[in-house]
Length: 107
Image 1 (cartoon, one colour):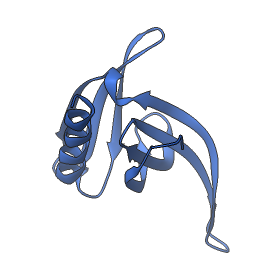
Image 2 (image 1 turned 180 degrees about the horizontal axis):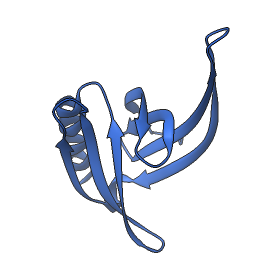
Image 3 (image 1 turned 90 degrees about the vertical axis):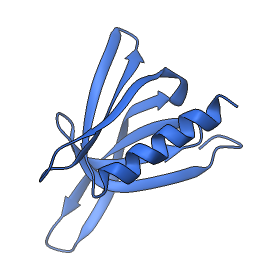
Image 4 (image 1 turned 90 degrees about the horizontal axis):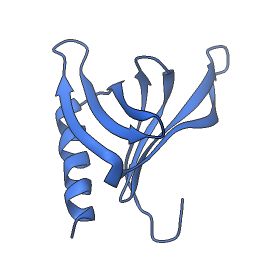
């Protein structure tokens, strides 16, 4: 993390296309790091950061799902826009945290 950056929230989850990893919300960005785990000894290792989106590039945030709850966002990337959908434990709480972080960024 960069100087002055603070972690707001972090959760082990799954993205529809990227599969298992850890979603992290900071006061400046949303990041998703791939993970690899072994059931045999319950270890988990961080892999590459595959999503690193500044909060200023997030265009839309919403939640969806009844049984499979997801927090979703659309962000500007190099080749247009991209939508990500993360299966998280409390999608409503994640939605509020992301919206709050984006609102605080504008201040």
